[in-house]
Length: 165
Image (tube, rainbow, N blue to C red):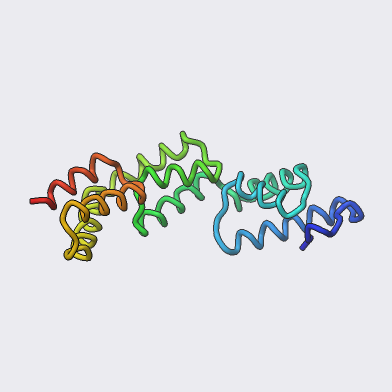
């Protein structure tokens, strides 16, 4: 691997590309990456933008990088935590996934997912933990918590109303 201080200009282009690919495979051993994320990491590591783009193209051709597959895996892993779709959309956007891809995949996955049930379960757990706190304060805390996790305000408000009674 090339450290930032090490100059790659002294190496032949083929060796630089090979080192770039090795580093990319190392990153992929830990988790899937988006194309944008991989490009940024390679440049940050000290490879030129041209070498980074060449490496990303190499990985795409061989299907080691696939934004659609990455986004699907990211959505599924984040739903298990559980996070809401709003937060997941923001995270995917930060990772360079287009809004169109994100929207399509979320619509596809939403069919078998009930946000209301998830929010209700989380709210119930939180209300149980906050039993000793005055009800208004507990509601505010739970409302804020659920919004930070990316659940839609409408579902959160409805859930809080259900738990008031």
